Image 1 (spheres, rainbow, N blue to C red):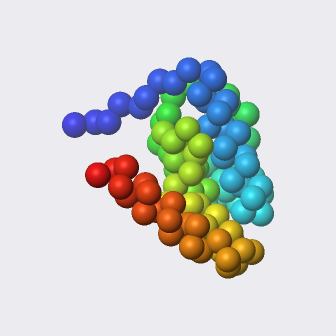
Image 2 (image 1 turned 45 degrees about the vertical axis):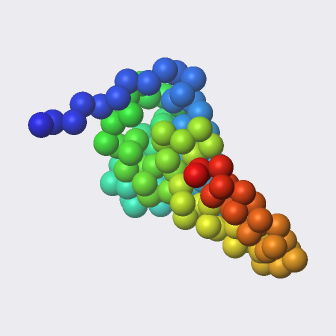
Length: 112
């Protein structure tokens, strides 16, 4: 069975594009590097970053995968990005480890 691409609203495309651009810049990547890594043309990557697409197709998904952005997540974070943020927090503030553990315990209790 062939997977059909998902049509999305312009506001969602703009939000995904902004997250992609932010992730690319945060990772110190150029448009050309993302294009090469995702198998897309750099002009297409640029258009996607500007939200100029209406379908969440294979190209968009490949770019998202390359820069580690989850297109379905409201904040665009995937597990590696969460790990990186947590690691940088704990490096900067090792004294925060107890608070982070307490937070995870509270989340675990909420999840049941």
